[in-house]
Each structure stands twice: as C-alpha cells, then as structure tokens.
Length: 264
Image 1 (tube, rainbow, N blue to C red):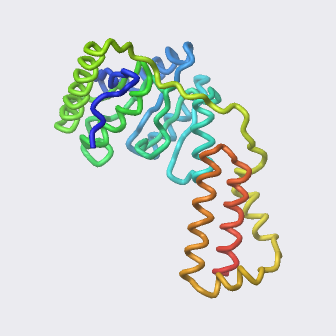
Image 2: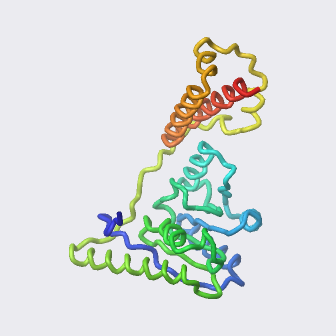
Image 3: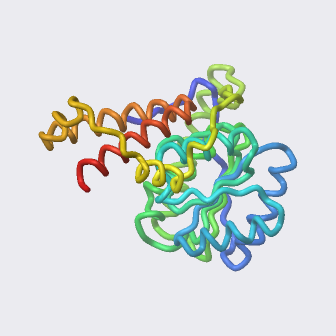
C-alpha cells in the first residue's frame, strides 16, 4: 500500500546522475560537505571488495566511516546505526542498505555507486528503496553514479519524480512547510565489553555451567528447543532496538551457550 503523502511534508530526494570514473573522489567531496554541517551519508557499493576498499580510502582521508556488512549481527548493527545517528560515524558504507532500521533523519545523502550495473541491487525496486533512505531529511538527495541510464534507473527516477510532484502539490494545497522527521537519539547507551565475539566464544567454551532441569527438558525436544531459541532471539532483538546492548549481548551469550550444549 503506497503512502501517498507524508504529514511532515517531506519531499522525496532530488536525484542527480554523475559519471562512474570519478565516483570515489566525488563521494569524498560530498561527504566532506555534509560532515561540515553535521549531516550523515549512506554509500552503497556492488561488491564486498569495493565496500572494503572505499572504507579504507575514506579512513585515510580522516572520514569517520563504518562498514555495515552481512556478517554483523543484530546487536552490533543497531549499535553502528546509533553511532551514525549520534555522529560517532559520518558515513555508513554497505552493499545492501535495504534492510530495516536505516531510515535516519540525519542522512541527507545516499550515494549509489555503479548504479548502471543491472542486477537485484540495482533493480527498479531496490533503487527506489535505496534512494528513499534520504527521504527523512529536508535536504535529502541521492546521487547515482552511472555512465548510462538503465531501464531500472529511469523507472526509479520517474517514480521518485512522481512522488515528489504529488507531495509538492499536497504541501501547496494544505499550506504545509516540509520539516525533517527528527527523532530524539538516546545518548546514554550501555556498551561495556558486550559486542566482542571472541570474548563471548571464550566465555561459552569456559562455561562449565550445569544444565538445569528445565533446559534438559527443552533440549530433549528439538521443536521445543527451536521455539525457545526463537523466543530468546526475539528478546535479544527487542533489547538491541531499545539500545540495551548489554542485555542484548547477554541474550546472545545465552543463545550461543544453549546451542553449544545442544549440538556438541
């Protein structure tokens, strides 16, 4: 179901197309412009190698950058997103930025590298959704780096323009002045040692904790065990979304411990 208009009056991002040849240097320039005015940037690449190289390159130029890759678990992911919002990072680099939790009002630019390469991550739907990551900021903009305009790009541009026109018309008819969808960021978070995977593995391997009677009962039934793990994972996700990172990591620790006991 399409959300036709936004009550905040926010208009879909303006789209620019720029050449692939200079995309990395151009992205650096755009990041610096936004860094100076306390805004954030999302950059999406097509390959892991490109994401890693770009992250290293940006770090060399003093950019506070985080690389959000598929191996990062839920707890760490929420922490990285929180750190982007609060300015610990200026930029988030990733391959697939379509996952939940990336609609951040602080993000004023989405840069899509190699936008003219056909495939799932550069399909019409993916492009529309990725461009939309900058839609919660008043100055939201998307730059597509491409040497040609693919069918997917054209359709994504047309759809974004259609939405822009509809919102502008709605704003004019109702006297709405667009405003950024700024949400309060909770500053005080509990990080501790909790997100160190090696520490957790050591703790688990060192744990000679006796299995309780309840746990033995659960482990005797694979279906019950799967259900219990699923419940713990939901609790972990809830805790991480509420920025209770220490609690979330304890849940993760418990999940790992139970799986080790079950399958070793």
